[in-house]
Amino acid sequence: MGMYTRSSMLLAAFLAAVFLLAGPVGAVSNGERAAESYLLVLVNRDRSSAHLGSLKEQSYIRGQAEAHTTDMLNRQSMDHNGFSQRVSNIRTHVVGMKYSGVCENVAYARGYTDSAKAMAAINSAWLASSDHHRCMMDQLGWSSQSAGVGVRYDGHTYWATFISGHNTSP
Image (cartoon, rainbow, N blue to C red; front, side):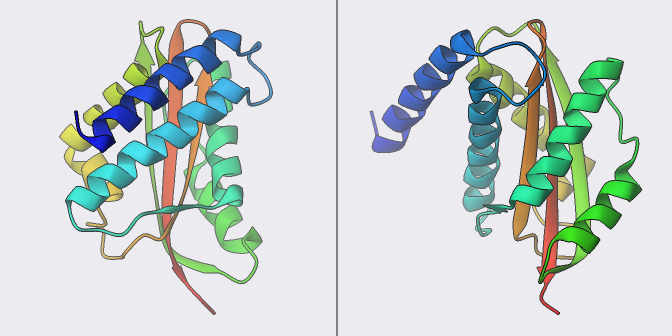
């Protein structure tokens, strides 16, 4: 087994253990935070395979992704409601940065008890969809640099939001 495969297996085992210890839905649990990080790792792995730079997690963008994911879970509806407001928030509140492009992918995965498998399924579905793939792989006319991921788990379904943006410094 190569180093990358062993690392992936260790991370998957860690995520499964953390999710078993996760608390109730509400604030971001340690398991949800680990799943968010893992989903960004998967996106960056695919970007690397396509010879694209890694996206750096930006905490404000992550907060916007987490808030939308919580909203989708609470409404039990997967959608882009409020996307324009999230874009405006990101452009306004990220001090010292001006985002010229922002895109968003949303998804849910039902029937998974293992967060790593759920995140892999969500990532695969995004890669298979032309619009989602374009967002992840910088095919919208800009080169993304920052991202945030939100993941929520209600005991049955993993909900996810991925937001990436191209930053042009002022």
